[in-house]
Image (cartoon, rainbow, N blue to C red; front, side):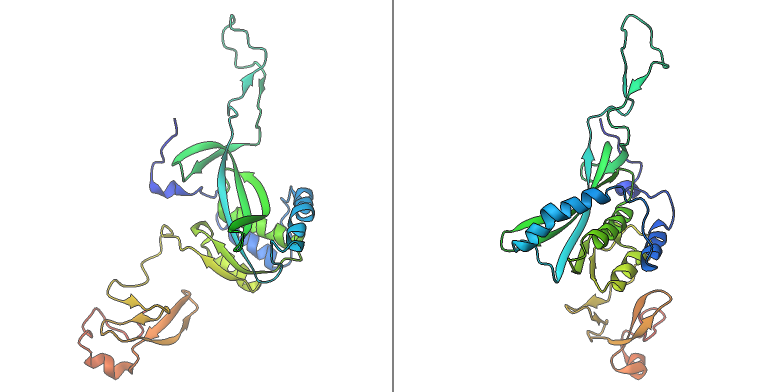
Length: 268
């Protein structure tokens, strides 16, 4: 029977080391390597026998590539406590009897789809979509620890992709909310890659858009008066775009919604 988490905060595996993504991204931005690259030979082999032939056949585009990355739980049927060697049912239990572990490098992780803990691994994949065949084609496959956070697995996979697949050029990167962190955005920006990352609603940040402000189709805020707001710069301290009343402060002082809170033309 699977265990249920004590709270909803365990929907994603929690990384033990704080700011690990920032440390890894700083290494990559400074031209250094990630040393726990255990699958270099396999990745190079997969690239030579699978990815390159797919590029030559036209299944994968080598330019303006849109790549998606995500991790999936891989359950193993191995017993985390192992099996006793030469057990004798006629003798009492002896904890000193040697045990055999069929998956000694497996670990416990949280499967968010099945909503239970599992014993096994995480398979992190980078893939692209072929529109004509309507199929996803793998570019990189990497087995990692089940307890490793997907944000760390992505940085390792991205590093291996750059190292072993230099002929493929990524233009867009699609990721889920596990990779919603500033170091990942900074890395993709440095590589001139457009990031499409789902925002993490559990990151603890305050709500940035008030309920009485609406967003137009092109991302422009609509004020309480129904007017499209005007850009007013960028705040580097909090990483926010600033918007103001399109008619300036004089219009704000006469607006019927001027009494809404401590009104400031720079709403957010």
